[in-house]
Length: 108
Picture 1: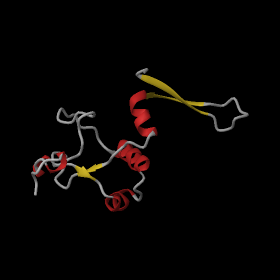
Picture 2: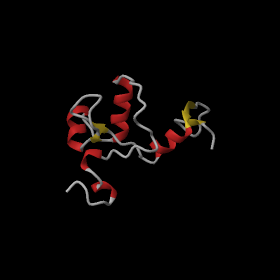
Picture 3: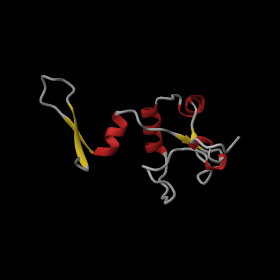
Picture 4: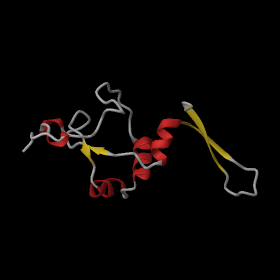
């Protein structure tokens, strides 16, 4: 699979007008499948992350639609480098709860 792709949009099938954006293919496919998750921490940027509830997202962003929330975070947020989160390995589970989320007997 190509690392980048063009995504084309024609406002009218009869028109020759066309808009193009260049995207990271893998991330675009995740977005297209609705695979984005928004995480929340009440402890700031270094806190434990948990999946944000619809109520939290509605209160903060006025919507819980992931596409709209992600767009707002990307537009108004600030980047922060990290080495502790690997996009293909991060599950959003809370490691302080033991092995409960992994099918073990911990965290009870």
